[in-house]
Image (cartoon, rainbow, N blue to C red; front, top):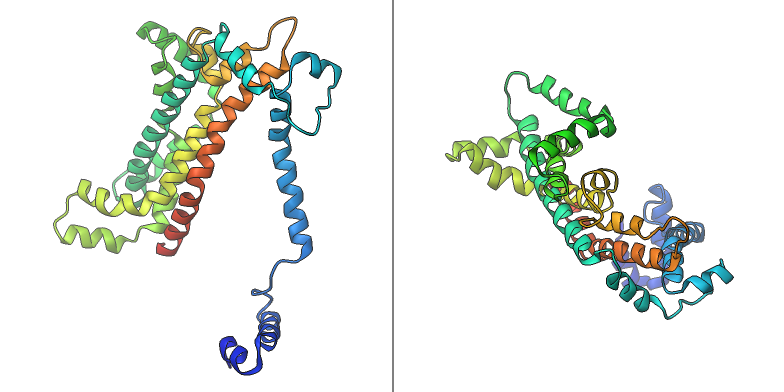
Length: 303
């Protein structure tokens, strides 16, 4: 079969395009470009996903009087966003402390979950010892237990330890994740061949060195995704921080909730706070998105 570059040189680019389309139809259409319907669906999905953020920007850049007069915001953002942000930081709610608490809690939780889950996943996936299967089933079964069942005893325990109203009370329960262990176990089971581990052992590497130089590089794509998901989960967490922390030492979701008064709610301030909470996550996805996708594709090729 003549290649497309040869056809383009001899018969012209039009003949090469025609030959490519004909070969695409013969192979089931794998080389065909998406049609207008595919692009139309993608545009609708993107606009639907972006509208909540657009609505938040519109309300966050407005003021209470304008929102009361016009519940449906105007097409273009107003010019009060920075004034609303200044009002947030000058108010009684400690936004600076809330932001710092959220950063520390989310980062510590992401790092600890990735570390412990990768170690446990390597153990369950590649090491052979008695009780490995039942222990993995027990770890996975804990995912079926509702979080609310452990709130009361955990609150009593942390109160007796004296770490209530302390971010350690939020970090410690988030250091290990059953889902993270399951995630890394399934990934390493497929992505890490036994031959690499045996070759490292033949070369005299210890178990820790084998994990550090063989298992950890193979687990990097899945560990990056797990770290990102864990960071987002604890950045937006509200239930347990609201119980263990006070309004003087909040996280960002707690600070947004504190903006809602009993008799009057200034939605311009609330939406400005929501936007301040959301923007760091958007920046994180923009910065890390390309690296994460390339890491996943590299891990898939290696697997």
